[in-house]
Structure formats: C-alpha cells, structure tokens
Image (tube, rainbow, N blue to C red; front, side, top):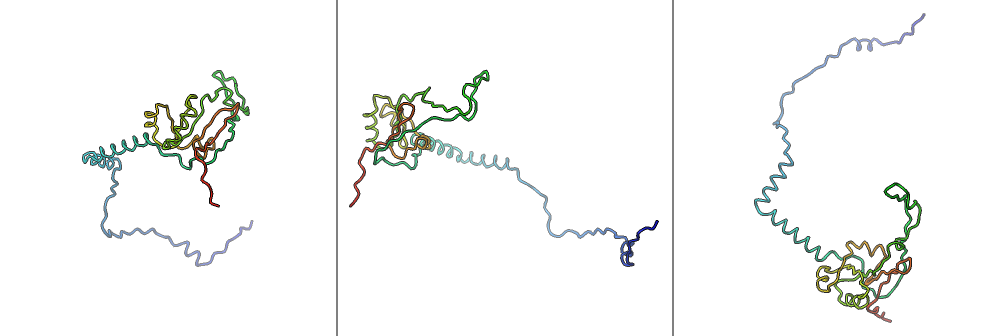
Length: 216
C-alpha cells in the first residue's frame, strides 16, 4: 500500500522542530497601588439618616410631608381639561359589557358564560343622579341643590375643597380623583349629570350661562 506524503519544506520542518519556551518576566511595580475598598451603601444611608435626625432635618421633612398630604386631602388636584358648559348637550351611555371569561360560583358552576352581554343596570340600578360640579363655582352648587336636592344626588367635584363644602353644605360630597369618571362618561364640561333612562344612562352637560355672543 502506498502512503500519501504531504510535502513540507525544510523551513517548515525546522520551525516545527524548535521548541517555544514560555517566558515570564517580572516588570516590577510602577506607581502607587491601593487596596480595593468599596464603601458599604447601607452604612452610608444609616450615617446620613443619623445626621439628619441629629440636625432636626428629619422632623422638618416629616412635617412638610404631613402638610402636603393634608393639603391634597383638603383640596385635591383639579381634573384637567374641563371647562364651564356654555352649550347644553346630551347623549346616551350604554354600560353593557361582554364577559370575556366564564364566571363561576363557589361550586365551579358557570353562572355567566364567556361572550354573554351583561347590562349592570339590570341588577344594580342607578337610584340617584351623579352630578359633576366645579366646587369653586357657588352658582353650580346652588343650581345642583335647587334642581336635585330632593333626589339625594351624588355630588362629585372635579375641583374645589370637598371637606370644607361637606361641612358648609351639610352634604356628602365625592371627588373624581384623576378624572376617571368624567373620562368614562365622556364629560367635557360641567355641571354635568348622569341619570338612568331605562337600560341606558343619559349624560347631560348643562349650560348655566349662555355662550358669549360672537362679534359680527
């Protein structure tokens, strides 16, 4: 049997035959060397808090936070984007929802199947109108009291001081924090009223003052 030979040049063979020793050198020390020291973050925080406590800053911060919290409760941030109604308008709001998953009772029996359309008004009617008001507008408050007083409306402010008005008006008053309700019903101006009409809700923005006349 003839073996195949791979030709090597003399130079290649010579390179392969020469060993390559590993060389290690000590280059000495250049410059100053410090040990690694990482500060303890928790210890820094504790020290900072201790200094604040000793200087009285902690008490000042707590007092300032308490004042801001009380101020927010007494006068929450007004709902942005609302204006006094200059034109009355009404529309219907259908609260019907489509159930996206089976609703089961405690025994696992399906009581409402997925895909069923459910109108909450069929089981929980809106017995009192929802009246959205600017709490800083006394005329709106007087109008609501005169118009809906005997129907025990749920007065919901979009601006103003609810606690002070509760005390002054002897009413239970709510506040639409963040404008969740007015966005849900599509309210753009106040005063606005939400009432039940059959199986839908009627939403009405009431213009208490006529719109300013346009210059011809």
